[in-house]
Length: 339
Ligand SMILES: NC(=O)c1ccc[n+]([C@@H]2O[C@H](COP(=O)([O-])OP(=O)(O)OC[C@H]3O[C@@H](n4cnc5c(N)ncnc54)[C@H](O)[C@@H]3O)[C@@H](O)[C@H]2O)c1
Ligand SMILES: O=P(O)(O)OC[C@H](O)CO
Image 1: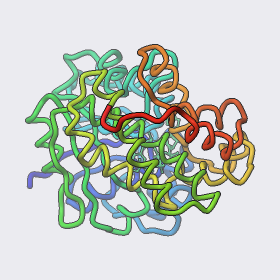
Image 2: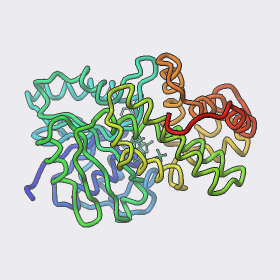
Image 3: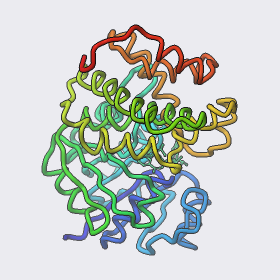
Image 4: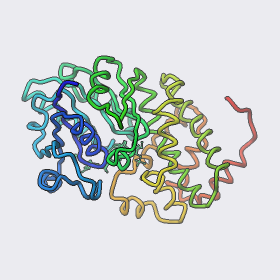
């Protein structure tokens, strides 16, 4: 494995965990944060306590406040900020790439859809970053909680890109005995699966808060995946992708794990906590809250049947009680499976 220079933009839970994988693989890893205090903590103590507690970070990770120093000569740049910060950070990256006249493989590990435009993260990056600065563009997706990755739980993800060489380079850079990267060319499927599973995970948390067991969970996962697949196919995704890591894999991980912010948000909402308090107390991004609104609007616009997404939307945005939302779902006219 050759030694690569890898810049990670965003030192939250996931950016830091991915930086750690790359550093453990012996790469030169620069972790950029817009918060100077976080950079200082990473460089001085090799910890990122707000996001990853007392898990020690590989000492090869160097924190940077200056994006240009982080990106200088980088082979691969990972964008791992929340969806809502993606354009802003991409614009900063473009300024840097123009200053140093440099091109990179750019991969987003963010999972979400942009409110208003309904764009996927890779679409935002394509719009913001001129092609002359790109040696390939794609996404990293799949069932992967930072909390598990940092503890070396065996984890599988996919690196999806139309540019197979770029995806293979990312695969080689990040794969090891506990972190296995598959390549995939279905970027749309990987992104729709990764974003939409968060909506279903909020629903799973709400079900759990009511004490419902395996029947209800299985119903939610199965019919939730059907909705994700319907939306994805309307945008040109390969339906097989939803049977893979970015589909059922990530849905299962997110909708069953206490590490999931989306699942935990669903539990708290089911227990009657106000949405604004859930967001404030989490202190980390809960992408599914915004994605639910985007998916609900998209479903209406494109006439795609997504009743579970609509139910989660009503709980989040119309203050509908979880039990009432479930009753509405169960009370719909019976229909044929497979449609
Ligand atoms: N946490 C996970 O296990 C995990 C796994 C896979 C994918 N993801 C996805 O990765 C993305 C990031 O999630 P996370 O868990 O790291 O979030 P987080 O809330 O833990 O951290 C977000 C980071 O982005 C930074 N940030 C926020 N706004 C910024 C801005 N305008 N400019 C620069 N930096 C900014 C924050 O300071 C923080 O360091 C999300 O889309 C999430 O769905 C997370
Ligand atoms: O903690 P969550 O709910 O944002 O989920 C994190 C990852 O997307 C799981 O693959």
